[in-house]
Image 1: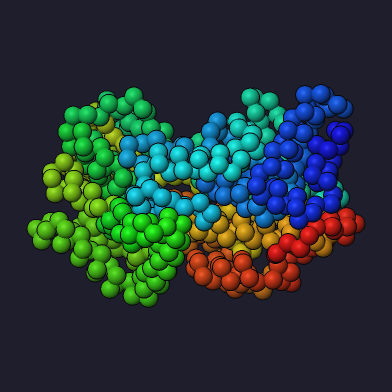
Image 2: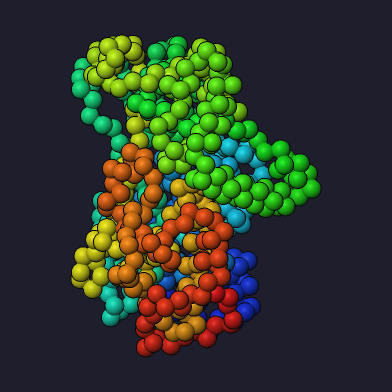
Amino acid sequence: MTARSVEGDGDDCTNRTVTAASIAAVRSGKLRRLRHEAIATLMQNGTQTDQRQIERFDVLIVGAGISGIGAAHHLQTRCPHKTYAILESRAAIGGTWDLFRYPGVRSDSDMYTLGFSFRPWTAPKAIADGASILQYVRDTAREFGIDEHIRFGTRVTRAQWSSDASEWTVEATRDGAGVHYRCNFLFMCSGYYDYANGYTPHFAGIESFRGALVHPQHWDAQLDYAGKRVVVIGSGATAVTLVPELAKTAAHVTMLQRSPTYIVAAPSEDRLADALRKISAEFAYAATRWKNILFGMAFYAFCRRYPERVKAFIVGAVRRTLGAAYPVERDFAPAYGPWDQRMCLVPDGDLFDAIKAGRASVVTDRIDAFVPDGIKLESGAQLPADVVVTATGLNLSVLGDLAITVDGRRIDLATTLAYKGMMFSGVPNLALSMGYTNASWTLKCDLTCGYVCRLLNFMARHGYTQCMPRDDATVERAPMIDLTSGYVQRSIDKFPKQGSKAPWRLYQNYLLDVMSLRFAPVDDGVLAFSGPERRAERLPALAD
């Protein structure tokens, strides 16, 4: 074996002829381990290699969170002839669930739809805490040997496509030094917000505040809030998670919001799943997953068609919980329609329990300025505070702010059209794994990963090395993310656009996406394929 096995055609590591038996071996993990050991031996022997060697893979995955781990499993199961690596900027697996460490952090979707399609969630809690989700993701990576493919501490900064070579050159930094990788296909699984900085608006007088100030994205584990007066600024998923948790030990917690958010209480455990789990964990997971998918789709459709009826139902449920004397219209009746922004889920109504117990309260007002011992409101009232938590949102990031060039031409993603919500007009061999805004993130990512595998197998069979969505000037353009939330509106102009018709339109509908991504032809007349100079590998029949 020579250096070409690492830097040349990635399939040299596994031989050009792949038999059905070898695919079975890959799926069991045996061939994958042999390949890993061979490459390790090569590097140890130093045969025609040195530290400047550029590693080449068929596919590079960026991000080792729930999206990236799912992508890796799909690749090694459905495209066993493809080599891959995962580039992760952080030092650990987990993505969002490793980043956020604030008290009470938990999912805002049920784990039967947020979990992986290929590995059942078996814990009793349907609305799980962050630590349990993180362990689930890490256990999955270890169980399937995915952790062996991860390059930690590797932050991707630039990707340059060469049509002549049919490959991406990916630039990254690791330990302060530049590193490079090459791949035929780049799969971005790094989410859509900035991990480095959360969003905090400018508040007048904030420098005069004598208490502790913290953003949930950068939580200080040493922060002592026990017995103290805490103000949480915000009313989104993070705020409604923090308030009941902090209220367990704080003197009092106030959720300060400019305007209300739809908040829905739901059981933290699923009775159907608990009953079916006695028969089979796999069956319980599959059945509950489909039950929750269909219910979520039906509820979303009902919200969009009958917004006033849904609003009355949600606000009425809060009124019944907090009592007729509580000013529900002021604090829990938004001016916008249901699903114009994401709804907040509170398991077992813990936020409402904290309010009823007097340990927490909600104030709907605007901030005039910070003062040394709290916050002065525009109404003239003042909130005393020892600790202020700015749960004021996230900053969105398009492909992790990756700089992209195609044949030397810089790509402005804001001018591109999003093909099936995952690829971009004028950009070859690149896909983005991005979840739903109205359902669990992983549902859409799972479909995206399956489609990418179909695409790669199609290209391998036909000898293609390049694929690219062709722009359609006839479609009307619209924002890629159709939410009115502040964190979306601040950055949406940087994102690719969606179109007015398929395959450019994002329907936010799981069943429609199943038809489009699992069953529709890969060669649909919109994707342009090229690269016949590299003949098809002689592979056994692989389903698209």
